[in-house]
Image (cartoon, rainbow, N blue to C red; front, top):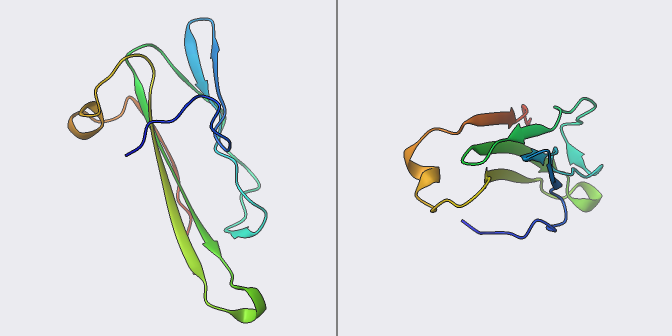
Length: 101
C-alpha cells in the first residue's frame, strides 16, 4: 500500500463543492483490452472511500512474451487510517477489469 500526492500522474483527483472527484485512471494505447468507453468520475464525500480496479495485458516487442498488470486504487477522502481499507467495504467501487486472453 502506498500513499500518494494528489498530483500523482495517471490519477486525476479534484476537489469541488466539498466533494472529491476521482476521474478514471489514465490508460495507455499499448495495452489490452481496448477501453473505448470509460466510467464517469466518481464523487466522494468526506469520510468515504473508493476502490477502483483496472487490468492490462501488454504484448512483448517482436512477438515476445505478454505481461499482465492489475492496478487497484484505494482512495479515501479526508483523514483515515490504512486499516479502513481492510475492515469496511468501500463506499463506492469501480471494476474495469476486462477479459485478458
